[in-house]
Amino acid sequence: MQQTFSRAAFALVAVLGPSAPVRAQTGPRDPGATRGLFLPSAFTPGNGRITGAVFDLAYFSFDAGIGDGGQAGLQFGHLGPLASYLGAQAKVAARGDGFAVALFGAGLLFVPFTGDIAPVAGAGPVLSVGDRNRFINVGFGAYSVAFPEHTVGLALPNAGFFWRLSRRLRLGTEISTPGFFANDALEAEGERAVKFEVAELWLIGYGARFVWPMTWLDLAFVLPICDGCGQVYRYAPIGIPLIGAGFAL
View 1 (spheres, rainbow, N blue to C red):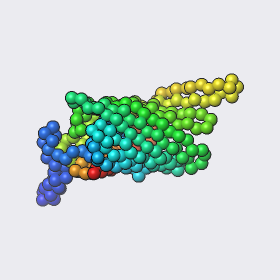
View 2 (view 1 turned 60 degrees about the vertical axis):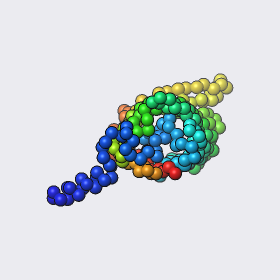
View 3 (view 1 turned 30 degrees about the vertical axis):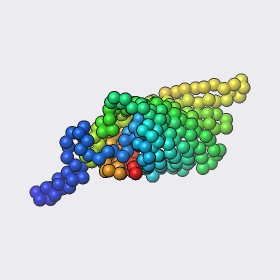
View 4 (view 1 turned 90 degrees about the vertical axis):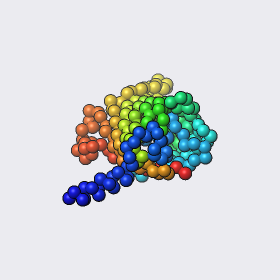
């Protein structure tokens, strides 16, 4: 039993690497530092680098670094049996002493499996305080979907903290609370009214990232907190899985 435990401990240390201070750059650069758990950070890949990411086999993203502070690429995926989407995305960032600030944007086509195709536009700022190994992330995204008769949208303020513990391991947490708005046609008055509602919902994500020189793997979970969310935990007691992987070349 003791020999088995020793072998298991040795294997764990070999995978995660030593827990020396990461500030000294003891490990490989995190190839997935352009995002927190899922939402974007203010960091960019670097000039000429190609990055890719996939989450839960439903979201796919590929980007190219442009100069020291830019990136552009494509994203596509599906929402289960409801719809698929395809579009372009970009980020422009500037770095200071101990922080980075960026503006990101995306333009997509939302393709329901039944119904009309709808254009989607989104943009927002993000601030990352720290470096790629240890940083606080604060962002805000606003997204709009234009259907023929009405427009619906999502406002997504978010914050997160990410800490590189060793050569191979990064821990992180991310919290967001969405707000929804709708622009509905009023048939009686022939006018349009904008309605905005803050959802009584919090999304708290937590997880670990395993880092290698050109690849990364995320094992994360999302905890929804709302009045009717108790049913979720009957089937996912530690949260909804968010499994991600990516590369940087």
